[in-house]
Image (cartoon, rainbow, N blue to C red):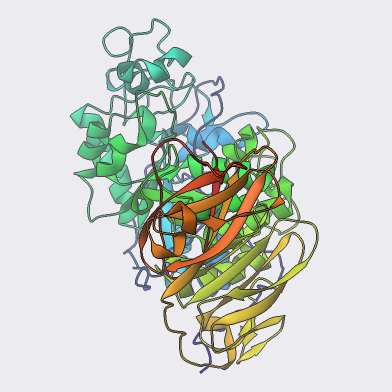
Length: 609
Protein backbone atom coordinates (compact mmCIF):
# COMPACT_ATOMS: atom_id res chain seq x y z
CA UNK A 1 0.00 0.00 0.00
CA UNK A 2 1.05 3.66 -0.32
CA UNK A 3 2.79 5.55 2.49
CA UNK A 4 0.59 7.67 4.72
CA UNK A 5 2.78 10.73 4.44
CA UNK A 6 3.45 12.87 1.38
CA UNK A 7 6.86 14.47 1.32
CA UNK A 8 7.61 17.73 -0.42
CA UNK A 9 10.45 20.16 -0.90
CA UNK A 10 9.73 23.59 0.60
CA UNK A 11 9.53 26.46 -1.85
CA UNK A 12 12.58 28.71 -1.61
CA UNK A 13 11.24 32.11 -0.70
CA UNK A 14 11.74 34.99 1.70
CA UNK A 15 10.23 34.41 5.13
CA UNK A 16 10.19 36.54 8.23
CA UNK A 17 12.95 35.52 10.62
CA UNK A 18 15.43 36.38 13.34
CA UNK A 19 16.97 34.70 16.35
CA UNK A 20 16.88 31.23 17.79
CA UNK A 21 18.65 29.00 20.23
CA UNK A 22 22.21 29.70 21.20
CA UNK A 23 24.61 29.73 24.15
CA UNK A 24 27.34 31.97 25.50
CA UNK A 25 30.85 31.20 24.33
CA UNK A 26 32.38 34.59 23.56
CA UNK A 27 33.60 37.34 25.85
CA UNK A 28 31.40 40.00 27.39
CA UNK A 29 31.98 43.62 26.43
CA UNK A 30 31.87 46.85 28.40
CA UNK A 31 28.79 49.06 28.65
CA UNK A 32 27.24 52.21 30.16
CA UNK A 33 24.02 52.69 32.15
CA UNK A 34 20.78 52.54 30.20
CA UNK A 35 17.13 53.58 30.59
CA UNK A 36 14.06 52.46 32.54
CA UNK A 37 13.06 48.81 32.89
CA UNK A 38 9.94 47.69 31.06
CA UNK A 39 7.50 45.31 32.78
CA UNK A 40 6.67 42.06 31.01
CA UNK A 41 3.06 41.85 29.76
CA UNK A 42 0.56 39.34 31.10
CA UNK A 43 0.89 36.24 28.87
CA UNK A 44 -1.96 35.01 26.72
CA UNK A 45 -3.39 31.52 27.39
CA UNK A 46 -1.04 28.78 26.29
CA UNK A 47 -1.78 26.65 23.24
CA UNK A 48 -0.47 23.09 23.44
CA UNK A 49 1.44 21.59 20.53
CA UNK A 50 -0.81 18.76 19.30
CA UNK A 51 1.63 16.07 18.18
CA UNK A 52 2.34 13.15 20.49
CA UNK A 53 6.12 13.47 20.60
CA UNK A 54 6.84 10.71 18.07
CA UNK A 55 8.44 13.40 15.90
CA UNK A 56 11.54 14.29 17.92
CA UNK A 57 13.81 16.13 15.43
CA UNK A 58 14.48 19.69 16.55
CA UNK A 59 15.35 22.62 14.31
CA UNK A 60 17.71 25.16 15.85
CA UNK A 61 16.80 28.39 14.05
CA UNK A 62 19.75 30.35 15.38
CA UNK A 63 18.80 34.00 15.90
CA UNK A 64 15.83 34.08 13.55
CA UNK A 65 13.31 36.75 14.56
CA UNK A 66 9.91 35.77 15.94
CA UNK A 67 7.80 36.44 12.81
CA UNK A 68 10.26 34.38 10.75
CA UNK A 69 10.17 31.47 13.20
CA UNK A 70 6.37 31.58 13.08
CA UNK A 71 6.38 31.40 9.28
CA UNK A 72 8.93 28.58 9.25
CA UNK A 73 6.89 26.53 11.70
CA UNK A 74 3.75 26.92 9.60
CA UNK A 75 5.31 26.51 6.14
CA UNK A 76 8.27 24.15 6.67
CA UNK A 77 8.87 22.62 10.09
CA UNK A 78 5.36 21.36 10.76
CA UNK A 79 4.61 20.03 7.26
CA UNK A 80 8.03 18.40 6.97
CA UNK A 81 7.88 16.54 10.28
CA UNK A 82 10.08 18.51 12.65
CA UNK A 83 8.91 18.07 16.24
CA UNK A 84 10.30 21.18 17.89
CA UNK A 85 12.09 24.45 17.25
CA UNK A 86 14.77 26.00 19.44
CA UNK A 87 14.69 29.79 19.61
CA UNK A 88 17.04 32.45 20.93
CA UNK A 89 16.92 33.94 24.44
CA UNK A 90 13.79 36.13 24.36
CA UNK A 91 14.59 38.44 27.28
CA UNK A 92 15.91 42.00 27.07
CA UNK A 93 19.68 42.14 26.55
CA UNK A 94 22.55 44.56 26.06
CA UNK A 95 22.93 46.50 22.82
CA UNK A 96 26.51 47.36 21.84
CA UNK A 97 28.31 48.69 18.79
CA UNK A 98 28.31 46.28 15.85
CA UNK A 99 25.58 44.18 17.48
CA UNK A 100 27.48 40.88 17.76
CA UNK A 101 25.36 37.74 17.99
CA UNK A 102 26.27 37.24 21.67
CA UNK A 103 24.35 40.31 22.83
CA UNK A 104 21.37 38.07 23.59
CA UNK A 105 23.48 36.13 26.09
CA UNK A 106 23.84 39.12 28.40
CA UNK A 107 20.40 39.68 29.98
CA UNK A 108 19.45 43.04 31.42
CA UNK A 109 15.83 42.31 32.39
CA UNK A 110 13.24 39.55 32.01
CA UNK A 111 10.86 41.62 29.91
CA UNK A 112 10.41 40.21 26.39
CA UNK A 113 11.54 43.17 24.31
CA UNK A 114 14.56 41.85 22.41
CA UNK A 115 16.34 42.12 19.09
CA UNK A 116 14.10 39.29 17.80
CA UNK A 117 10.81 41.06 18.57
CA UNK A 118 8.46 41.94 21.40
CA UNK A 119 6.21 39.92 23.73
CA UNK A 120 3.22 40.01 21.38
CA UNK A 121 5.32 38.70 18.47
CA UNK A 122 6.82 36.03 20.73
CA UNK A 123 3.34 34.87 21.78
CA UNK A 124 2.19 34.82 18.15
CA UNK A 125 5.21 32.72 17.25
CA UNK A 126 4.53 30.16 19.99
CA UNK A 127 0.90 29.89 18.93
CA UNK A 128 1.79 29.54 15.23
CA UNK A 129 4.33 26.80 15.98
CA UNK A 130 1.88 24.89 18.17
CA UNK A 131 -0.79 25.17 15.50
CA UNK A 132 1.71 23.53 13.13
CA UNK A 133 2.41 20.72 15.64
CA UNK A 134 5.85 22.09 16.56
CA UNK A 135 6.95 22.49 20.17
CA UNK A 136 8.98 25.54 21.25
CA UNK A 137 12.26 25.27 23.19
CA UNK A 138 13.64 28.55 24.56
CA UNK A 139 17.31 29.25 25.19
CA UNK A 140 17.32 30.30 28.87
CA UNK A 141 20.21 32.42 30.15
CA UNK A 142 19.97 31.95 33.93
CA UNK A 143 23.61 31.63 35.04
CA UNK A 144 24.54 35.29 34.73
CA UNK A 145 23.59 38.80 33.69
CA UNK A 146 25.87 41.31 31.90
CA UNK A 147 29.58 42.10 31.89
CA UNK A 148 29.07 45.80 32.62
CA UNK A 149 26.37 48.41 32.18
CA UNK A 150 25.10 49.36 28.71
CA UNK A 151 22.06 50.26 26.67
CA UNK A 152 19.47 47.53 26.18
CA UNK A 153 16.88 46.70 23.55
CA UNK A 154 14.05 47.01 26.05
CA UNK A 155 15.27 50.21 27.69
CA UNK A 156 16.30 48.64 31.01
CA UNK A 157 18.35 50.66 33.50
CA UNK A 158 21.22 48.64 34.99
CA UNK A 159 24.85 48.30 35.95
CA UNK A 160 26.85 45.08 36.24
CA UNK A 161 25.59 44.22 39.75
CA UNK A 162 22.41 46.30 39.92
CA UNK A 163 19.23 45.52 38.00
CA UNK A 164 16.45 47.61 39.58
CA UNK A 165 13.43 45.57 40.55
CA UNK A 166 15.28 42.27 40.07
CA UNK A 167 18.81 41.92 41.42
CA UNK A 168 21.27 43.88 43.53
CA UNK A 169 24.89 43.15 44.50
CA UNK A 170 23.96 40.60 47.20
CA UNK A 171 22.31 38.43 44.54
CA UNK A 172 25.61 37.66 42.82
CA UNK A 173 28.67 35.54 43.61
CA UNK A 174 31.71 37.52 44.76
CA UNK A 175 35.27 37.02 45.97
CA UNK A 176 36.15 35.86 48.63
CA UNK A 177 32.95 34.47 50.14
CA UNK A 178 31.86 32.56 47.02
CA UNK A 179 34.63 32.64 44.40
CA UNK A 180 38.18 31.74 45.38
CA UNK A 181 39.88 33.88 42.71
CA UNK A 182 40.62 37.50 43.61
CA UNK A 183 39.64 38.73 40.13
CA UNK A 184 36.27 36.98 40.51
CA UNK A 185 36.53 34.98 37.26
CA UNK A 186 36.93 31.32 36.33
CA UNK A 187 40.57 30.52 35.56
CA UNK A 188 41.66 27.89 33.05
CA UNK A 189 43.05 25.68 35.82
CA UNK A 190 39.69 25.71 37.64
CA UNK A 191 38.03 23.45 35.07
CA UNK A 192 40.15 20.51 36.25
CA UNK A 193 40.58 21.45 39.91
CA UNK A 194 37.76 23.48 41.50
CA UNK A 195 34.01 22.92 41.36
CA UNK A 196 33.68 25.88 43.73
CA UNK A 197 35.20 28.26 41.21
CA UNK A 198 33.46 26.75 38.19
CA UNK A 199 30.09 27.23 39.90
CA UNK A 200 30.73 30.45 41.83
CA UNK A 201 33.10 32.57 39.73
CA UNK A 202 32.31 34.66 36.65
CA UNK A 203 32.43 33.20 33.17
CA UNK A 204 34.39 35.68 31.03
CA UNK A 205 33.57 38.50 33.41
CA UNK A 206 29.77 38.15 33.38
CA UNK A 207 27.98 38.91 36.68
CA UNK A 208 27.42 35.42 38.13
CA UNK A 209 24.04 34.96 39.79
CA UNK A 210 23.97 33.39 43.25
CA UNK A 211 21.82 30.49 42.14
CA UNK A 212 22.05 28.99 45.62
CA UNK A 213 19.95 31.89 46.96
CA UNK A 214 16.26 31.16 47.48
CA UNK A 215 15.44 34.66 46.25
CA UNK A 216 17.41 34.23 43.01
CA UNK A 217 15.90 30.80 42.45
CA UNK A 218 12.47 32.36 42.79
CA UNK A 219 13.25 35.07 40.24
CA UNK A 220 14.62 32.55 37.75
CA UNK A 221 11.66 30.21 38.21
CA UNK A 222 9.30 33.17 37.83
CA UNK A 223 10.89 34.06 34.50
CA UNK A 224 10.72 30.48 33.21
CA UNK A 225 7.15 30.06 34.45
CA UNK A 226 6.12 33.22 32.60
CA UNK A 227 7.36 31.55 29.41
CA UNK A 228 5.64 28.22 30.02
CA UNK A 229 2.44 30.19 30.69
CA UNK A 230 2.80 31.47 27.12
CA UNK A 231 3.07 27.88 25.88
CA UNK A 232 6.83 27.28 25.86
CA UNK A 233 7.50 23.54 26.05
CA UNK A 234 11.07 23.39 27.25
CA UNK A 235 14.39 25.12 27.78
CA UNK A 236 17.97 24.92 26.67
CA UNK A 237 19.84 25.93 29.82
CA UNK A 238 22.74 28.12 28.73
CA UNK A 239 26.03 27.73 30.65
CA UNK A 240 24.52 24.99 32.82
CA UNK A 241 28.01 23.69 33.58
CA UNK A 242 28.64 26.90 35.52
CA UNK A 243 25.61 26.24 37.77
CA UNK A 244 25.65 23.80 40.68
CA UNK A 245 23.26 20.98 39.62
CA UNK A 246 21.65 21.16 43.08
CA UNK A 247 20.81 24.81 42.37
CA UNK A 248 19.29 23.87 39.03
CA UNK A 249 17.22 21.20 40.71
CA UNK A 250 15.96 23.80 43.20
CA UNK A 251 14.90 26.13 40.37
CA UNK A 252 13.20 23.27 38.52
CA UNK A 253 11.29 22.29 41.65
CA UNK A 254 9.51 25.66 41.44
CA UNK A 255 8.47 25.27 37.81
CA UNK A 256 4.89 24.75 36.72
CA UNK A 257 4.43 21.55 34.74
CA UNK A 258 7.34 19.45 33.45
CA UNK A 259 9.13 21.37 30.68
CA UNK A 260 11.85 19.51 28.79
CA UNK A 261 15.33 20.62 29.92
CA UNK A 262 18.43 20.51 27.69
CA UNK A 263 21.53 21.57 29.62
CA UNK A 264 24.70 22.99 28.09
CA UNK A 265 27.40 20.96 29.85
CA UNK A 266 30.54 20.65 27.71
CA UNK A 267 32.57 17.49 28.30
CA UNK A 268 36.23 17.60 29.27
CA UNK A 269 38.00 14.33 30.08
CA UNK A 270 39.75 15.74 33.16
CA UNK A 271 37.13 18.28 34.18
CA UNK A 272 35.84 18.27 37.76
CA UNK A 273 32.33 19.03 36.46
CA UNK A 274 30.94 16.29 34.20
CA UNK A 275 27.69 16.00 32.18
CA UNK A 276 26.65 12.97 34.25
CA UNK A 277 26.18 15.24 37.28
CA UNK A 278 23.25 16.88 35.46
CA UNK A 279 21.29 13.82 34.34
CA UNK A 280 18.93 14.21 37.29
CA UNK A 281 18.01 17.72 36.08
CA UNK A 282 17.27 16.77 32.45
CA UNK A 283 19.07 15.97 29.20
CA UNK A 284 22.43 17.38 28.12
CA UNK A 285 23.88 18.73 24.89
CA UNK A 286 26.28 16.10 23.51
CA UNK A 287 29.22 18.11 22.19
CA UNK A 288 31.30 14.98 21.64
CA UNK A 289 28.78 13.80 19.04
CA UNK A 290 29.70 16.64 16.69
CA UNK A 291 33.41 16.39 17.48
CA UNK A 292 33.49 12.72 16.48
CA UNK A 293 31.47 13.32 13.31
CA UNK A 294 33.91 16.04 12.27
CA UNK A 295 36.71 13.54 12.89
CA UNK A 296 35.20 10.82 10.68
CA UNK A 297 33.36 12.88 8.04
CA UNK A 298 36.28 15.28 7.87
CA UNK A 299 39.60 13.50 7.45
CA UNK A 300 38.75 10.08 8.94
CA UNK A 301 36.84 7.04 7.75
CA UNK A 302 33.10 6.81 8.31
CA UNK A 303 33.36 3.01 8.45
CA UNK A 304 34.63 3.57 12.01
CA UNK A 305 31.09 4.59 13.01
CA UNK A 306 29.75 1.03 13.09
CA UNK A 307 29.47 1.04 16.90
CA UNK A 308 29.11 4.80 17.36
CA UNK A 309 27.32 5.77 20.54
CA UNK A 310 27.52 6.05 24.29
CA UNK A 311 30.45 3.62 24.50
CA UNK A 312 32.64 6.26 22.84
CA UNK A 313 34.63 8.41 25.26
CA UNK A 314 32.75 11.40 26.61
CA UNK A 315 29.41 10.62 25.02
CA UNK A 316 26.21 10.41 27.05
CA UNK A 317 23.53 7.73 27.33
CA UNK A 318 21.36 7.98 24.24
CA UNK A 319 18.24 8.81 26.23
CA UNK A 320 20.04 11.78 27.85
CA UNK A 321 21.68 13.25 24.75
CA UNK A 322 20.74 16.10 22.44
CA UNK A 323 22.75 15.20 19.33
CA UNK A 324 23.91 17.82 16.85
CA UNK A 325 26.53 18.14 14.11
CA UNK A 326 27.13 21.81 14.91
CA UNK A 327 25.81 24.77 16.85
CA UNK A 328 26.59 28.48 16.98
CA UNK A 329 29.60 27.97 19.27
CA UNK A 330 31.22 24.95 17.62
CA UNK A 331 30.88 26.27 14.06
CA UNK A 332 32.89 29.30 15.20
CA UNK A 333 35.53 27.59 17.36
CA UNK A 334 36.35 24.88 14.80
CA UNK A 335 35.21 21.91 16.91
CA UNK A 336 32.63 20.81 14.35
CA UNK A 337 31.78 20.77 10.70
CA UNK A 338 29.69 23.69 9.44
CA UNK A 339 27.88 24.95 6.37
CA UNK A 340 31.34 25.95 5.09
CA UNK A 341 32.23 22.24 4.72
CA UNK A 342 29.65 21.59 2.00
CA UNK A 343 28.86 17.94 1.24
CA UNK A 344 30.79 16.62 4.27
CA UNK A 345 28.49 18.66 6.50
CA UNK A 346 25.35 17.49 4.70
CA UNK A 347 26.37 13.82 4.89
CA UNK A 348 27.18 14.12 8.60
CA UNK A 349 23.65 15.42 9.16
CA UNK A 350 22.21 12.59 7.05
CA UNK A 351 24.04 10.13 9.29
CA UNK A 352 22.81 11.88 12.44
CA UNK A 353 19.19 11.60 11.31
CA UNK A 354 19.68 7.96 10.28
CA UNK A 355 21.55 6.72 13.36
CA UNK A 356 19.78 5.60 16.54
CA UNK A 357 21.38 7.95 19.05
CA UNK A 358 19.95 10.79 21.09
CA UNK A 359 17.46 13.47 20.11
CA UNK A 360 18.74 14.93 16.83
CA UNK A 361 18.88 18.65 16.13
CA UNK A 362 19.36 20.29 12.72
CA UNK A 363 21.12 23.66 12.92
CA UNK A 364 20.05 26.54 10.66
CA UNK A 365 21.92 29.78 11.22
CA UNK A 366 23.47 32.62 9.25
CA UNK A 367 26.68 33.02 7.26
CA UNK A 368 29.62 34.82 8.84
CA UNK A 369 33.18 35.88 8.12
CA UNK A 370 34.19 36.87 11.66
CA UNK A 371 33.22 35.00 14.82
CA UNK A 372 31.42 38.00 16.34
CA UNK A 373 29.37 38.89 13.26
CA UNK A 374 25.76 39.95 13.77
CA UNK A 375 22.92 38.09 12.10
CA UNK A 376 21.34 40.14 9.28
CA UNK A 377 19.92 43.15 11.13
CA UNK A 378 18.95 46.78 10.75
CA UNK A 379 21.08 49.68 11.99
CA UNK A 380 19.64 49.38 15.51
CA UNK A 381 20.54 45.68 15.81
CA UNK A 382 17.01 44.32 15.38
CA UNK A 383 17.19 41.11 13.36
CA UNK A 384 15.55 41.40 9.96
CA UNK A 385 13.25 38.85 8.34
CA UNK A 386 14.92 35.68 7.14
CA UNK A 387 15.66 35.65 3.40
CA UNK A 388 17.12 32.28 2.42
CA UNK A 389 20.40 32.68 0.57
CA UNK A 390 20.79 36.30 1.66
CA UNK A 391 22.90 35.78 4.75
CA UNK A 392 20.80 32.87 6.05
CA UNK A 393 21.65 29.20 5.41
CA UNK A 394 18.08 27.83 5.86
CA UNK A 395 19.67 24.40 6.25
CA UNK A 396 16.49 23.04 7.83
CA UNK A 397 15.03 23.29 4.29
CA UNK A 398 17.88 21.44 2.55
CA UNK A 399 16.27 18.69 0.43
CA UNK A 400 18.34 15.98 2.11
CA UNK A 401 17.32 17.27 5.56
CA UNK A 402 13.63 17.36 4.65
CA UNK A 403 13.79 13.81 3.32
CA UNK A 404 15.79 12.47 6.26
CA UNK A 405 13.56 14.08 8.90
CA UNK A 406 10.68 12.09 7.41
CA UNK A 407 12.91 9.00 7.22
CA UNK A 408 13.86 9.43 10.89
CA UNK A 409 10.19 9.65 11.86
CA UNK A 410 9.36 6.56 9.79
CA UNK A 411 11.99 4.31 11.41
CA UNK A 412 11.26 5.38 14.99
CA UNK A 413 13.26 3.37 17.51
CA UNK A 414 14.03 0.41 15.20
CA UNK A 415 17.47 -1.11 15.73
CA UNK A 416 20.39 -0.72 13.34
CA UNK A 417 20.97 -3.80 11.20
CA UNK A 418 22.49 -4.97 7.91
CA UNK A 419 25.62 -2.89 8.51
CA UNK A 420 27.96 -2.81 5.52
CA UNK A 421 31.12 -0.84 4.84
CA UNK A 422 34.00 -0.93 2.40
CA UNK A 423 36.39 -0.36 5.31
CA UNK A 424 36.77 3.28 4.35
CA UNK A 425 34.21 5.93 3.43
CA UNK A 426 31.21 4.03 2.12
CA UNK A 427 28.66 2.64 4.57
CA UNK A 428 25.10 1.35 4.58
CA UNK A 429 22.67 0.08 7.19
CA UNK A 430 19.00 -0.54 7.85
CA UNK A 431 16.73 0.38 10.75
CA UNK A 432 14.62 -2.70 11.38
CA UNK A 433 12.22 -3.29 8.49
CA UNK A 434 11.37 0.43 8.26
CA UNK A 435 14.31 2.12 6.57
CA UNK A 436 17.63 1.74 4.74
CA UNK A 437 20.38 4.26 3.98
CA UNK A 438 23.67 4.18 2.07
CA UNK A 439 26.22 6.99 2.46
CA UNK A 440 29.08 7.58 0.01
CA UNK A 441 31.82 9.93 1.22
CA UNK A 442 33.94 9.27 -1.84
CA UNK A 443 34.01 11.40 -4.99
CA UNK A 444 33.11 8.51 -7.29
CA UNK A 445 29.68 6.89 -7.72
CA UNK A 446 29.22 3.25 -6.78
CA UNK A 447 26.58 0.57 -7.18
CA UNK A 448 26.02 -2.46 -4.98
CA UNK A 449 23.35 -4.93 -3.91
CA UNK A 450 22.45 -4.47 -0.24
CA UNK A 451 20.33 -6.29 2.32
CA UNK A 452 17.79 -3.58 3.19
CA UNK A 453 15.47 -5.36 5.64
CA UNK A 454 12.48 -3.77 3.85
CA UNK A 455 9.51 -5.61 2.31
CA UNK A 456 9.47 -6.04 -1.46
CA UNK A 457 8.42 -3.01 -3.45
CA UNK A 458 9.61 0.16 -5.17
CA UNK A 459 10.64 3.03 -2.92
CA UNK A 460 11.43 6.70 -3.46
CA UNK A 461 14.97 7.82 -2.59
CA UNK A 462 14.03 10.57 -0.13
CA UNK A 463 17.48 12.21 -0.28
CA UNK A 464 16.84 13.13 -3.92
CA UNK A 465 13.08 12.96 -4.32
CA UNK A 466 9.69 13.30 -2.68
CA UNK A 467 6.47 11.32 -2.71
CA UNK A 468 3.32 13.14 -3.74
CA UNK A 469 0.09 11.27 -4.37
CA UNK A 470 1.94 7.95 -4.52
CA UNK A 471 4.40 9.20 -7.15
CA UNK A 472 8.13 9.83 -6.66
CA UNK A 473 9.67 12.83 -8.41
CA UNK A 474 13.22 11.47 -8.03
CA UNK A 475 15.16 8.18 -8.24
CA UNK A 476 13.59 4.96 -6.98
CA UNK A 477 15.02 1.78 -5.46
CA UNK A 478 13.40 -1.64 -5.96
CA UNK A 479 13.56 -4.20 -3.14
CA UNK A 480 13.09 -7.87 -4.03
CA UNK A 481 11.30 -10.59 -2.06
CA UNK A 482 14.47 -11.38 -0.10
CA UNK A 483 14.77 -7.78 1.04
CA UNK A 484 17.74 -7.06 -1.23
CA UNK A 485 18.10 -4.03 -3.51
CA UNK A 486 20.69 -2.70 -5.91
CA UNK A 487 21.33 0.98 -5.22
CA UNK A 488 23.32 3.45 -7.27
CA UNK A 489 24.90 5.87 -4.80
CA UNK A 490 26.30 9.12 -6.24
CA UNK A 491 29.66 10.44 -5.13
CA UNK A 492 29.57 12.56 -1.94
CA UNK A 493 25.89 11.79 -1.53
CA UNK A 494 23.48 9.26 -0.06
CA UNK A 495 20.45 7.13 -0.88
CA UNK A 496 17.66 6.55 1.66
CA UNK A 497 14.37 4.66 1.48
CA UNK A 498 11.77 3.95 4.15
CA UNK A 499 8.38 2.37 4.68
CA UNK A 500 6.62 5.70 4.08
CA UNK A 501 8.36 6.21 0.72
CA UNK A 502 6.84 3.05 -0.84
CA UNK A 503 5.35 3.94 -4.20
CA UNK A 504 4.46 0.47 -5.53
CA UNK A 505 4.39 -3.14 -4.37
CA UNK A 506 4.19 -3.91 -0.68
CA UNK A 507 5.29 -7.47 -0.01
CA UNK A 508 5.89 -9.17 3.31
CA UNK A 509 8.91 -8.39 5.48
CA UNK A 510 11.68 -10.93 4.84
CA UNK A 511 12.04 -13.42 7.73
CA UNK A 512 15.03 -13.00 10.05
CA UNK A 513 17.99 -15.13 8.93
CA UNK A 514 19.33 -18.10 10.88
CA UNK A 515 22.89 -17.17 9.88
CA UNK A 516 24.65 -13.91 9.01
CA UNK A 517 27.84 -13.00 7.19
CA UNK A 518 30.70 -11.70 9.33
CA UNK A 519 33.64 -10.16 7.50
CA UNK A 520 36.82 -10.70 9.53
CA UNK A 521 39.61 -8.24 8.75
CA UNK A 522 42.88 -8.15 10.67
CA UNK A 523 45.97 -6.01 10.11
CA UNK A 524 48.83 -8.48 10.58
CA UNK A 525 52.45 -8.34 9.40
CA UNK A 526 53.84 -11.75 8.42
CA UNK A 527 57.05 -13.26 7.10
CA UNK A 528 57.36 -15.39 3.97
CA UNK A 529 55.42 -18.63 4.32
CA UNK A 530 53.22 -17.50 7.20
CA UNK A 531 49.43 -17.37 6.76
CA UNK A 532 46.69 -15.96 8.96
CA UNK A 533 43.54 -17.80 10.08
CA UNK A 534 40.62 -17.13 12.40
CA UNK A 535 39.23 -19.65 14.86
CA UNK A 536 36.68 -19.41 17.63
CA UNK A 537 34.00 -20.76 19.92
CA UNK A 538 31.44 -21.85 17.28
CA UNK A 539 31.62 -24.67 14.78
CA UNK A 540 31.72 -22.26 11.83
CA UNK A 541 35.07 -21.02 13.19
CA UNK A 542 36.42 -24.49 13.91
CA UNK A 543 35.47 -24.67 17.58
CA UNK A 544 39.02 -23.66 18.63
CA UNK A 545 40.46 -26.53 16.57
CA UNK A 546 43.38 -24.97 14.68
CA UNK A 547 43.06 -27.67 12.06
CA UNK A 548 39.57 -26.37 11.24
CA UNK A 549 40.45 -22.67 11.43
CA UNK A 550 39.28 -20.43 8.56
CA UNK A 551 42.05 -19.16 6.21
CA UNK A 552 42.13 -15.42 5.48
CA UNK A 553 43.10 -13.86 2.15
CA UNK A 554 46.19 -11.64 1.90
CA UNK A 555 44.94 -9.85 -1.24
CA UNK A 556 44.82 -6.53 0.64
CA UNK A 557 48.00 -7.18 2.69
CA UNK A 558 48.78 -6.27 5.45
CA UNK A 559 45.01 -6.63 5.97
CA UNK A 560 43.94 -10.29 5.91
CA UNK A 561 40.28 -10.89 5.13
CA UNK A 562 37.61 -13.60 5.05
CA UNK A 563 33.81 -13.64 5.22
CA UNK A 564 32.30 -16.38 7.38
CA UNK A 565 28.66 -17.34 7.97
CA UNK A 566 27.95 -17.42 11.71
CA UNK A 567 24.75 -18.21 13.64
CA UNK A 568 22.48 -15.18 14.03
CA UNK A 569 21.89 -13.61 17.46
CA UNK A 570 24.83 -15.43 19.01
CA UNK A 571 27.73 -14.38 21.27
CA UNK A 572 31.02 -15.52 19.70
CA UNK A 573 34.61 -15.52 20.95
CA UNK A 574 37.43 -15.71 18.46
CA UNK A 575 41.17 -15.24 17.89
CA UNK A 576 43.53 -14.97 14.95
CA UNK A 577 46.38 -17.44 14.51
CA UNK A 578 49.42 -17.66 12.24
CA UNK A 579 50.42 -20.99 10.73
CA UNK A 580 54.16 -21.11 10.18
CA UNK A 581 56.06 -22.89 7.36
CA UNK A 582 57.21 -25.62 9.80
CA UNK A 583 53.57 -26.43 10.70
CA UNK A 584 53.64 -24.75 14.12
CA UNK A 585 50.90 -22.33 15.18
CA UNK A 586 51.29 -18.85 16.73
CA UNK A 587 48.29 -17.48 18.62
CA UNK A 588 47.74 -13.76 19.02
CA UNK A 589 48.22 -12.63 22.63
CA UNK A 590 45.71 -11.22 25.09
CA UNK A 591 42.08 -12.00 25.81
CA UNK A 592 39.73 -13.54 23.29
CA UNK A 593 37.98 -11.17 20.90
CA UNK A 594 34.23 -11.04 21.42
CA UNK A 595 31.31 -10.24 19.12
CA UNK A 596 27.57 -10.75 19.19
CA UNK A 597 25.88 -11.35 15.87
CA UNK A 598 22.51 -9.86 15.08
CA UNK A 599 20.27 -10.48 12.11
CA UNK A 600 22.40 -8.64 9.58
CA UNK A 601 25.90 -8.72 8.16
CA UNK A 602 28.75 -7.17 10.12
CA UNK A 603 32.45 -6.38 9.74
CA UNK A 604 35.26 -6.79 12.29
CA UNK A 605 38.26 -4.51 11.80
CA UNK A 606 41.01 -5.86 14.08
CA UNK A 607 44.76 -5.54 14.60
CA UNK A 608 46.99 -8.50 15.47
CA UNK A 609 48.27 -8.31 19.03
